[in-house]
Amino acid sequence: MAKRRSNGEGCIYKEQRSGRWVGKFEIGHDSKGNRRFKTCRAKTEREVKQLLKDLMDKHRAGINVTTNAIKVGDFFEDWFYKNVVNNLRLSTSQSYEMIIRRHIKPQIGNIPLAELSREDVRNFYNFLYADGRLNGKGGLAPKTVENIHLVLSSGINYALNEGLIIKNPLLTVKLRREGKKEIEVFSREEQQKIIAECPNHYYGMAIKFDFYTGLRAGELLGLTWDCINFDKNTVRVNKQVQRNKNFSHKADTKTLLDFVYDTKTKTSTRTIKVLPQLMKDLEKYKNEQDKIRKKLGSDYYRFNLVFPRQDGYFTDTGTFLDNFARIQKKLDIPHRTVHAIRHTFATRALESGVHIKVVSELLGHASIQITLDIYGHVLQDFAEQELTKLEGMYA
Image (cartoon, rainbow, N blue to C red; front, side):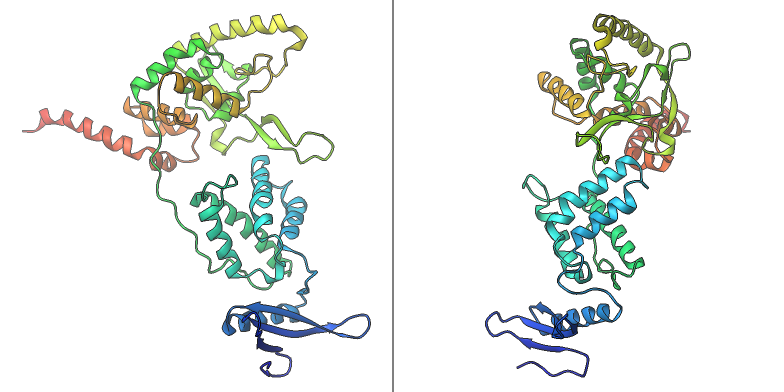
């Protein structure tokens, strides 16, 4: 039998067949004058009381709590395309879209927005930690779940401001914190072996150039010849190459490979000094590229790229990574990502005594603290070695 409650507070009862608790309250009448009810279910009486209270509070606040109310997935898609896509950097918009499409919609997309609970969010995050990989091979890293949380939080805050919900289901949800990862660095011997192998590969000069500049992969592949100053031995980093989702409905392709003129941070746009020996090698490389360009004529893409495909078109970072992986395999070197080249450059620079502030500027970090957080252990090891020089001064 349903438990009687005060007028306007609905009723609560336990289903005999399922054993679940049910909460129910009146939300109005249909076009024929029949009474309409909103129902919720939970495992315990305590849970269903809370659910019922939340739904009634939302109903009194004018929020649609019927089964045909907007679902989480539909809300986030609508919110993204109307409020986000044109207000963020292209790479950030792409990240938001991917998170909504790949994670939010498939897992919690069918839940009515007004009914999204803390328990729903906790279950969602627990799933991501345990089985969130799209290939079915385990869970996502805490940092990835944190990125998903940021998107979910942004959308929920918008819904709160718009009066679509009255409580934030994320307030008491805690995220796991990721331990500090050890960076991957090539040993001096491995670095020398890779550089010695570079002349045998089309992207060899790009790999060698990266070992001595520490550019991000997108920055490296986005370099154009007008940013290279052979007289001053400098390189201007002001853009990157990136494959992004095509948000324009006019084109047929789902993704576009193109220049992105907003680098990762404000300090990412920078001019760096380059070793004169490296610039001489780059000049020889340019002469060879000019021969290819003249040979292909009008079939050569006019993007003026330093490290393009053989036809002058953009090099996809995936293609570059594959080529680099093949070199490591050939040399029997444990596989590391292209980003390990950047870490190797920074480590070698610090080991050679280059000031941490200079290294930070070369890498384009937003602050010297970021450089210290990543490479502080290198400085500590270097300091211990340098301290031995004071032994002769000890009296």
